[in-house]
Length: 79
Image (cartoon, rainbow, N blue to C red):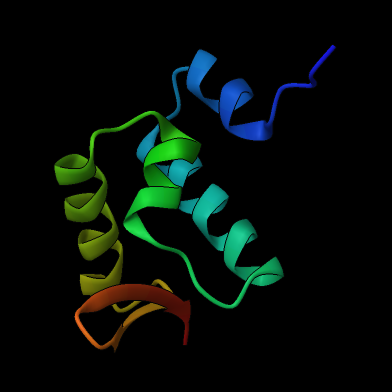
């Protein structure tokens, strides 16, 4: 029996934007970077919505999330 990942648990729940921000911050505390693809898997959002929301988190200077680029790849990191 294959265990379900945390993403499966998160997708089954209706999460608020605040909950998703906390989830992104928790992920970044344990990992150096967060990709749009990973955030999609965590939240169940499509890539356009996920990227827009992560960019909105970055735009709010109260949040410690920032963007870095690795070549063309956009990554989100803790400030």
